[in-house]
Amino acid sequence: MALLEVYKLNKRFGGLLAVNDVSFQVNPGQIKAVIGPNGAGKTTLFNMISGTFPATSGSVVFQDWDLKGKKPFQVAERGMARTFQNIKMFSGMTALENVMVGRHVQSSAGFFSSMFRMPWTWKEERAIRDKAMEFLALLEIEEFANTDASSLAFGQQRAVELARALALEPQLLLLDEPAAGLNIYETAEVGRLITKIRDLGITVLLVEHDMSLVMDISDEIVVLCFGEKIAEDSPQNIQQDPEVIKIYLGED
Image 1: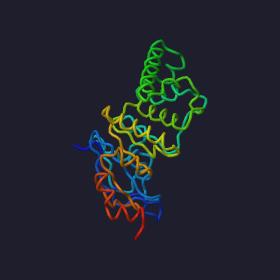
Image 2: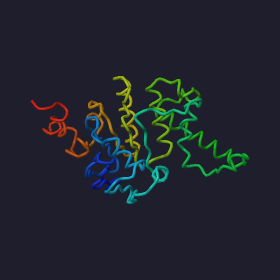
Image 3: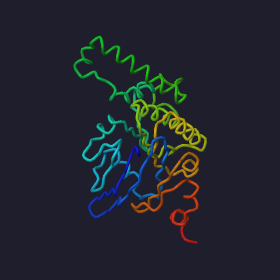
Image 4: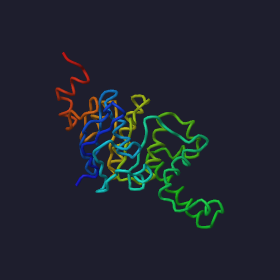
């Protein structure tokens, strides 16, 4: 049974049809990639899946749960986490504190209990801190736990962002261009971490422009062009697909 099912999804912005009748499934335990040239509709697709944009028509079903009308925080509570192309660190906060923010859906403390520092909130905060450290250790950046996150190297910030998403303990992790801005060595490291995340049992759906990364780590690939799906297959078959070759390399 599919973990995520996207069915005939459409998105219009006025007269522009940004995503046109796109359908695909993501099965548990997969790394599935969505690729395509600039303007293909990849980020718009992600925004609809994660609840940031409402779809004009079509449906997104996650764990047999229809996401129509659901807010991003409700989607996150259900078990879907997302990162963004542009890294967003909370300035003035350590790497550890940034990851702790990702545990907010696991927290039960409300405004007043936190404000008055009720005894049980201390216990919960310690548990959140310990769990956040586990995710930093998992991604091998625990040595930077007490470092201001915004002062870290770009690749290290990307790892903190991944740890923060994992702190939600998602069933599905959406990665929007995880290799954006990284050099070849940092990209290879991010690829290794994504594979490590999948091996923990977390399903991954990513948008990415780096074709070497996509081909190395993906189980299946969806190709978009001008908002439409033109191919969906294994990396080996996608590399040989005439339509895919044409949109990336042009005619002869």
